[in-house]
Image (cartoon, rainbow, N blue to C red; front, top):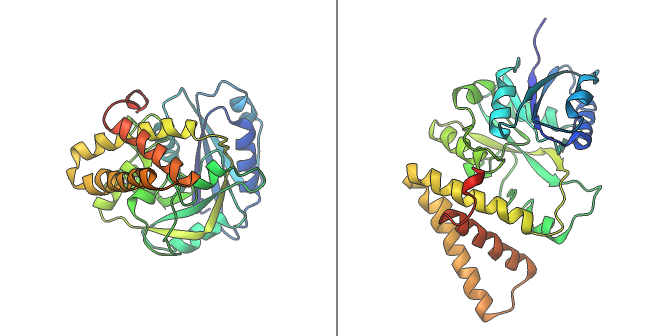
Length: 293
């Protein structure tokens, strides 16, 4: 018998109730004549995630579960991918819930080609979407899809470790760098290495997932920005050619925005943007974020 056409890899940690929604959404996928498997890597949960997973069976796919002890999302993804039986892997977050046609959209856009597909990530509309969340995505510092066209190229800075599919061999040849211990910049760093090898990524506008995460304030995201700043310094140190796109251009935009605040009253999104850039610079110069890499 032919093996699965797609392996879905999901790292998780202490989010059993949200993971349940994601797996239920996979059970409801419209994926005609193509089988898929799901590999969930429980990365050190201390809730009932492991026990709950052990009791689950699904009709639409085979569920495989693996257990690690807090190695981080990069390592958890690498482990899950190493158990993939399909020639293509789709990465999902445990809080990134696919719509019914998402898996089919990934496969249709990939075709038989050697290409990565970055799907669109939107906020879960069943929950309140706060002003902070509207700022962060889908055209903000967390997820940026503005200007992308369906089937068109995606820059490495807009490749994310969620709702993203690519040939399994790509992941095995150029895996995530496991020294990045948090879900921040490990996907950008990998996408940069892939781009250097000429491995292209296209945008799948119809491959949509709903991100079930809530922000009432900007503060939790600012620490993520500090970590991103420290990670950027690390990457650019070894690859100076990235200094313009990852450091100088964002700093220039931040300087223009800061100057604007002196002259006119800025909007709430602009003030949040300036705070995010400030947190990024803090991590960049070594004032925060180092311990989270």
